[in-house]
Length: 359
Image (cartoon, rainbow, N blue to C red; front, side, top):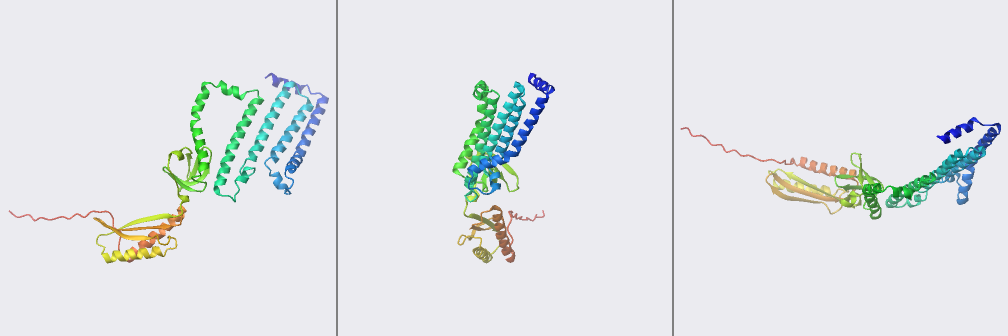
């Protein structure tokens, strides 16, 4: 409160000379604001001598942070020209230090951004999807490290020793450590996913009761989009304790079908149906050649079974559903042409009528 009062008293007692100093300070700030884009451009150009495109230089991760840094320095020099009281100068110095820390942190964050900085080379869109996933994951880890480092430096600006703060937590630190167990477990699992690559962004996977397309892999969790377009967030530790099915890694899908026909269907009709189904499958371009099999399999109390199975190279789930629909429609047309319906579960009850004798 005393510092604020000192600042207020300072402005109350402004003299003519101080007004001149304020004018000079404003001019200095204006000059730095005007020159900051030029100076930033020239500094980056020194490291990018071969770069001729001005827009690419301006899109450099450090271009905007450098501009902000020079403007902050200009404001601080302007404050020095005004020569405020010591308390106000101390506050301005702290604000400048914090601004410099934040600006440098922002530049580093831009530098490790997968779309802007050095990580962009690792994420190269010409490389496999695995490299993009690793690049995005690495970028997130580096960003958090930068943010934590910036936070610790800001604490130091206010005279707070981070190590003393952590040591002073005592029992609280043990509680925090216990609470962080799940975080660490998910983090380690995230690194395991990055190294083993059981799935990548864009893959269709199934884990536990969840199935869908992987849309994001972070250091803590993985997000998948289900067939109804809902987003499910799964902790990375789940993937180390459950089996994961990656449907996108398949080269072929197997399609199996069991058709039950009524018991009264005669053998000639069954043979004709089997041959016709086999013919349409052998001539289906989406069925892998030589894999279609159709058999009159079993005779049961409620009907006769025809077993059908085949392989297709259609992997995409929606495309695979369309393939199944077309095969099912072709089979139903054959049954309709042969005037045979599919049997349904049932049970015949035979009643034996006994005539009562008249006594």
